[in-house]
Image (cartoon, rainbow, N blue to C red; front, top):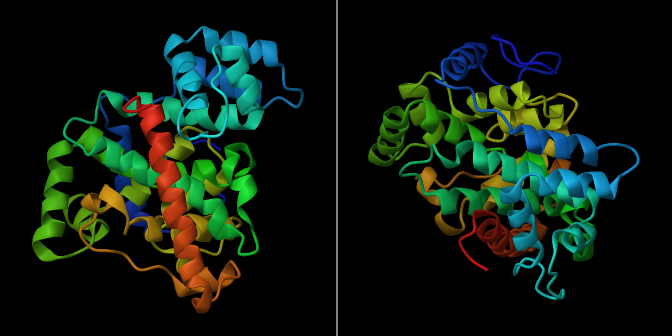
Length: 311
């Protein structure tokens, strides 16, 4: 699923074609195109093999001390409050399991890609929102779902899509921090959404830049489309509607919580069509809001562990 100057192909177009072209030019024009580390790619490849080779994965993780320390920290963090502390990487990997290791390795790699580029960004607030959305997307996708499996990131099919839905914000900031700040200030001054201000300043939004980069990283179509359509799911008729709707709902509801609102001065509403498409009803919206609030608390704990800002 390679990227192209014309933007994502082979799926329903979910955004303005000229905006996609402008975003593609912007991403290609970055001084250095953000790429996932070689060590992270090797671990992800090993985790995705049909037969999980624990010793291979362990040896690959051990070759990246930063990644090893982060996974051990997460395994011992408040994100898993009821579990006994583990003293070494092998026990940590065993606790997490193959799918969960894969999710966390990708999350760690994305943090490292942009870590040196964030400057004055509200780094903690950004990742609090992103991890909350990642956890909440599964909860939003299943109205009949009841909590236990939500504690297992590996059992969450929309974790990565939720995690990276706003990645375009970091792409814009990395490429043109002054331009992004202008867009943010324009949104605040005029009381408009960040996306509307981005269109004025850049000619595209973070949805397009995020989608372009995610496709260049060859992530699954559901992940790419969820980034592209998370503000406009009603226009999407492609093959990944459930993922798009789940990420949209979780993202919009998370916007009202914590510091994530600092990136968008206008509190965005959620799509009634997406709500109904996933099997929710307006009467059950308070239940969904409560699920998302709980996911935000868990997401904040996980973000703190991944960023190393708290035990």
